[in-house]
Length: 496
Image (spheres, rainbow, N blue to C red):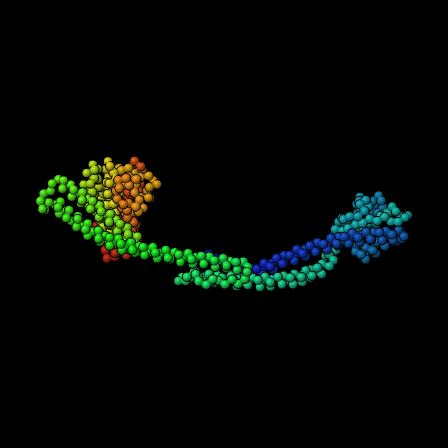
């Protein structure tokens, strides 16, 4: 695992930056000073070459020709410079240089008068001066090398070092003091914020004191305003939440009481209706039997609506619990198909079942509710054709597929039909149901650890796939008392 690189603390980094910047500035100042000293050395060499040339030319003019060499040699030894005596045609008479020779070169020096050239001394400044009469045809050229180390270089360096140490030291101390104060303020604010962020600690409370009117102080003030707004928002949220929880409790209590009050007379109505329809007390005329059948159907529909509302309330409150056992999904689906076969036959539909025994860990009652909702909707909204139901045992799951030849659904409605109280336009026109069946179905399937899939196109019918896990859901305790080999083996029988 790669370790995170730790950067120096701001308390050290700020003075270090000041020191580095100060040293760079001192180096730049020193370089500028050295450049100026070099230019002054060049200028001094040019003046010295002119002074030597004119002075020695005058002295050579008053001396005997035989003494000229001795005079120039003595001057060269004392000054360390180079001299050249030539005529106007460029002929060299006396050469006390270390690399300048030839008529062309001498003539060039005479022609230019002064300038810069290269000799044995290196880069030098030269100046040519004419001897006085009667030797005005002779020229003396003096070569003076500028100093290797400019004059006062050591003094400049010592001064720059002293000034740099003084100013950079003072600036570093000031930067350290300011940084320490800022760092202390930041650590204080950070400590307060960390304390607010700890578990079991309310973010609201006393504001963070503002230490100074600087950027940290402005940040602290802004944070205090943010905390105040958060505290107000949290208080409003808690009030709304407590009101919503109270509303949910009241609604659950009301639905429970309403269920009890409605179920008691409704069960009595349905019971007596069944007794009368059984003709225990005598035969019924056709009109009476038809009327009682309508009462029985309407009562059953009302009881189903009450059950849907109560199931949705239990799901939303988290009170619904599953009784998961090892069940045969195919047997449950077979019973549902037989029950709904009468309704399908009355509409002229073919309700077909295929597949083989498939076992899964599920709540038998809820599986009956899930599959009954899906097949019931397929029969309800299919006007012609057939409804195919197939149960397949896959390696890790059981799949119940319901395919109808109904009107189908647009892709934009695939997710909407699983929402509470949502109905298709056809269902709203026919006033069929409350729009809770599929919403409850998906929630129940997800509680089992499964999923519901839909494929549908307008005019081409719909296919629902209900997938349930073969094993227990991950959030429930595995039943270790039942050995894995004790599962009923699926029989590869195709039924229709």
